Image (cartoon, rainbow, N blue to C red; front, top):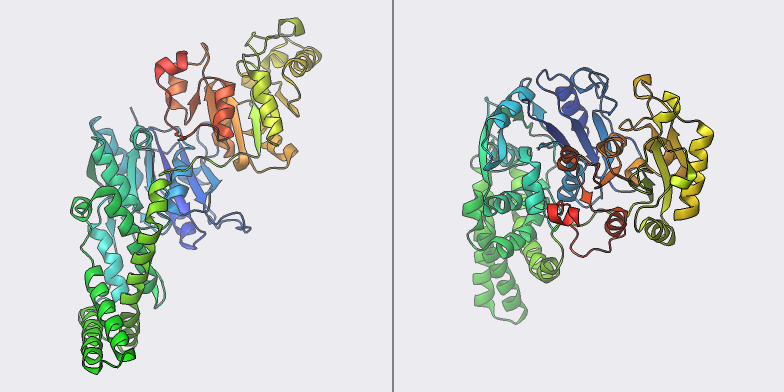
Amino acid sequence: MTVAYAIVVPTTGRPELARLVDALAAQAGPRPERVAIVDDRGDGAGAALDLGTNAGSGWLADADGDPRARVAVVAGPGRGPAAARNRGWRGTCADWVAFLDDDVVPAPDWSERLVADLERLPAAVAASQGRIEVPLPADRRRTDRERCVAGLDDAVWATADMAYRRAALDDVGGFDERFPRAYREDADLGLRVLEAGHGIVRGGRTVVHPVGEAGPWASVRLQAGNADDVLMRALHGPGWRERAGAPPGRRPRHLATVAAGAAGAIAAATGRRRLAAAGGAAWALGTAELAWARIAPGPRTSGEVATMLATSAVLPPAAALHTARGLLTLPRKLRGSASRAWPRPRAVLLDRDGTLVADVPYNGDPDAVRPMAGAADAVARLREAGIATAVISNQSGIGRGVLTADRVDAVNRRVERLVGPVGPWLICPHAPDEGCDCRKPAPGLVLRAADLLGVDPADCAVVGDVGADVGAALAAGARPKLVTTPQTRPAEIDAAPEVVRDLEAAVDRLLGEVAGHSTRRPAPEAMAA
């Protein structure tokens, strides 16, 4: 049986994204269920992402009449790649989630090798790491930037190409959103997955990671990661580097250099000339050693030497400042939640039968309407919170000739009298074989409801009791919540990103009234309660 997988790509709109999409469109192996590109530029992003010209063609095109868009641009929370990846994987139903960075180029056989890597793994193995190749010049020595990127060749658990079982992500809560940068969030996840008793292996697939342009001060900006290293030590203990395969780094030397310079400056200010000279000499020696360590293996061009000299004077104080910032903010981070809840939706789209009212097949009798327990209160709470609502419902009885549109309208009016105003009603009247774009799991009803309410589909939650409701939400880029009823099939429960007992529980989650929010599914006994 072919492995079911999704691809998640966080991006801030870098131009390399189109190159990645082109490489995916050229694949020939098994297709993903979904490619979620998480636009993490924040609310002010404005401009559309450049996905190139192949986002809907070739390997990425819909196949076999599948109504879901294979490539979906999902609005990210704007809090960094950890939160963006969480937004992406929680919106998929696939058993496996393959994370790619937006600046890599998958090999032509990447998808074929990915599936080969995953389908032979035992249940105890929760993750497979791809191989990262960094193209480097063969006719000269590597620059400092090139040597830094080349470290990805040996990096452990780098999310430039990392596939995780969705069950394992559920188990550990996904990425820790207290890591705001593309730094250490992947190592932290890998350590937590291992600590939870899962295995991680290296696969045979390959992506190419070009060096790219970063500017002369890139090494200084990277020192912000020292704050994340403080959090890593607090979370995983002093031996975290060895267990995560992370190089030792130069922070102790940077701190020593800064301490020497600070001591010299204080001594000079207080008239202690010998101590000032000793401190100054130690600072100069530390800075010179750092500069030479970076210049010696490089091409030693005038531009490279100048850059190394300038940045080597700034790196130690930058490292020290970010370390201090990490220590100062550590108490707050340790009190904070590792993985934030989804943001509150602007609109909630409700299924009718099995969600708002008891499911009576092809019901055309208003007197047969029975509200689900707590439905009226749940709808009232959404209204009080200022969240727009609408109903999206398949009513194939009209297309089958079993019902008339007037009878369906009469039932809908009865529903509103019992549960209260629910906003616009959007009905699919077609029979299953009519090939419309509105019958769930197609996204049409979700997209139209969002348009009527004046919100983006990504700001909508869809609550329903069957897999078609989940599929429609995912196809439109909305957040699905599956409420369980006796009619909900086990396979639909297993595939749903988020499962709750009933509409009231769904509203609890959506309004953020449940402490310690988790996307993990409730235990079977909880769902039966």
